[in-house]
Length: 158
View (cartoon, rainbow, N blue to C red):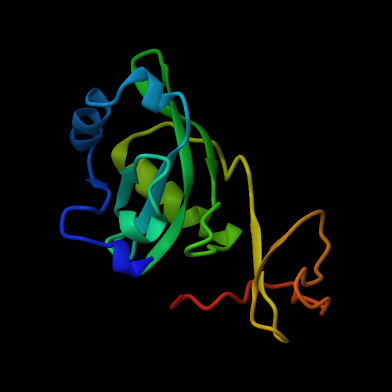
């Protein structure tokens, strides 16, 4: 994925309400009808990109505090996050990354839910090293059948 990162291909930095207003004004209704790609960089700044963008590209190939998909809706005179997940197979962020997302959204002045509206649980198999999405609390590797750890163990350097 990192090879797809080119100068200017990363997501749009949103570090203020004015930057969000400028960015959202350029979006079509069709684009806003589906969730967008987001990352919160190591600097704590939100970056947004079209949905089919890779998270690693959105982040400019750098480390992140969180990543996933996000949707917005206009409520009265302000924009609010209508849906948000940590669904990023490029970074596999833990559900505890929500606090970084909340800080980034609060900094911009966006309304938000109290947590991810859809949580994805990622684990790396200690036996075969494959990344797994845990469904229905079944902590078993889908690749080799080994038990997966209860706590997040995906290498943050991935």
